[in-house]
Image (cartoon, rainbow, N blue to C red; front, side, top):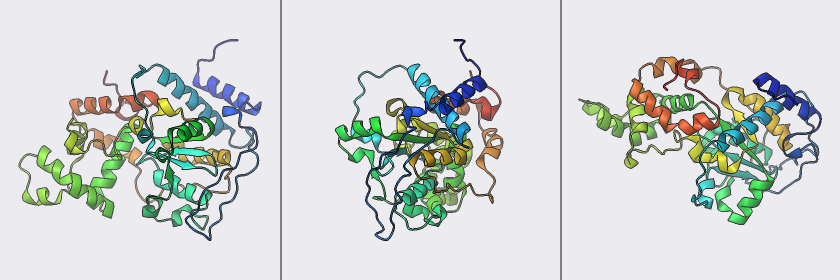
Length: 339
């Protein structure tokens, strides 16, 4: 059989396979039900739908999910194996568990994790209502809303990794980093004030020459260049491991978990529609993004053009595995390679 080299060819073959009933993990079959507790006694979760068909209007999104899973496995195979790596439950801290729908979801800050948590709250009956945007963001992130995979025994973790669907939503590393900067250091939200107080003042003190007393006291005017210096400085005290800009590969361990549902931020709603159908919760609607503000993807050039070549090199090194594993490139943002 001739090898299929082009992206279009691979997608066509994936689509054909899906239509023949060869979906990921052979899931063209009844969805098993689990059980989950509810924080709202009045909210009753709707049970998963009893069947899932691979042939349907969202077939293209399905073929892309298949292709991404194959690409993830291939990319992970090219990385050196860490034979002495100790696997403990702690590394699964960012994976939340939906037992009702047999789903593991690794949430990544600045990649629609608030909306995904809202959607899962509705699907699992933790919120009475059908509009995800009615759920306050701070409630979606409240401790105890979801059980983390790290809270299970290693035996239970292994069983769930083998039998549950595993969802991750990824984004271009440079776009995600800029989104974190704009949200936490430029905006005037309450959460922004926390980051400006905790990190901003330290950034100004360390990376700005002749800083004014007001800037040192407030930390609310950090430039993007100063923020990049902070993130890329190898100093354990500077908070470079904060989850809002920590590499996705360090949060979600994709080569260990082997995600079978890999959504991308650039096709967020289409992917979510397919994932919700796969879960057995097609009645839940994933919210579209806000239309009032200019998207970060349209501002990349104006921010990254302020950085030096050395700063860009440091960022590329920091997010090297994210670029490699999830098939992103520097050219998408910079228009050239740093090689």
